[in-house]
Image (tube, rainbow, N blue to C red; front, side, top):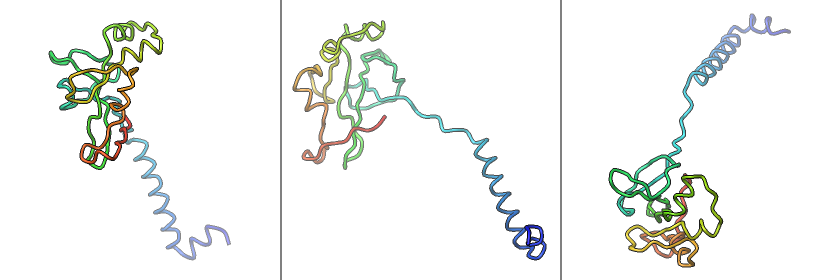
Length: 153
């Protein structure tokens, strides 16, 4: 028995096949004409010492002027307490100038010229300083015995 005979003997089978084909076509058309989600490739910055954050283009080289204030890059973390600013980062004037001019830096220059601090701290610490390890790996603010996890940006 071929397909025509089966459909003519059992019209419900033909209707079911027709419905499935129409559904597949509708899904294909919908997916074809639906816009692709646009990835948000912006990253977090702060212009108030890490109290709050805002999104901006990832090619901004901190510190930069943001409405009359100096903006630094925020590195976000998550923990049981939620998402928070783990530390903020900027570059020394000399390293920032080299990045902007696309002039290569040695690893040592980059490490010495990349400055980090916790929100609210008074002093910036070079990433080359062993003290930066505590800054770069913050703990959950509400449970200091638990290390927080970096948020993928």
